[in-house]
Amino acid sequence: MKNEKTYELVLTALFTAIIVIMAFTPLGYIPLVVINATIIHIPVILGALFLGPKKGAFLGFVFGLTSFINNTFNAVTASAFVFSPVLAVNVVGISGIFRSLYICFVPRILVGVVPYFVYLLIRKAAGKEQKTGRIVVNTVASVILFVSVRAFLIRLLPETLSAMVCTIIGLAVGAVLMVILTVSGNKKESAAIALSYAGLAGAFTNTLFVMSGIFILYKDAYAKAVGVAGEAVLDVIMGVVAFNGVVEAVVAAIIVTGVGLALTRVKPVYGKMSNKQESVGLAAKKA
Image 1 (cartoon, rainbow, N blue to C red):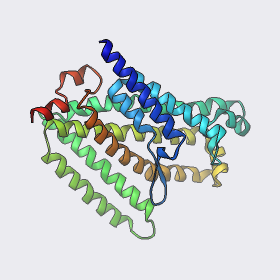
Image 2 (spheres, one colour):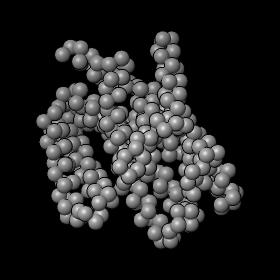
Image 3 (cartoon, rainbow, N blue to C red):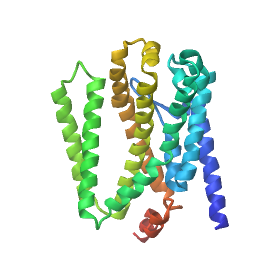
């Protein structure tokens, strides 16, 4: 018991250090063709899975704190005030303190909570004995991939590919995933699916809560900051969700799955349910 607590303390400190290093160096971003995809939320997601939602929430708070510090003392965008209560006061007054505190911290804290419960739900539903659950999980995964690929292509190549072509490509990719998931069915693959969902859930939790918070709390101020009309803010936000959000979610799903499967060889996912299930590491050893 003492060794377990020490292990979790060390792991918490390690994830905290990784978040801080990523936040204040270029390591927290993956340069892509047209954008940088942040991966700072990935240690928070992994922390939620292997340390539980309480420590995951703490790591999410650390993520939010680094965002607050970065946007306050190293503001590089006109919209940095949405993450900084200090800057927000000059933009919308005293109420900006509470608005920015919400956007800066609440979504990030939820990133350390939501993935854990998504993992448990999907692991239970996608179990080999749960055929109906697996079908539902596989279908949802395929639909998410279809919608994501279609939205990404439409946003990336609006003048090159028609909406119909993007839809066909999205359907094809979704169908391929459905076939792969249907053919697979052992415990290791079930864990991989659950980890992928956890990664997606964590990334989308951050994107959706942050962007919806900006729209609800800072619509006019954000429009002025980015130089668009007030009625165009929703289009800008949907563009961020469809492009940045999709890229970051896919990156998170891939990294969380890979790192998560590696970590399960030495430590099972946190919680009573995962302890009752055979860990991926034990399954690998028996094989």
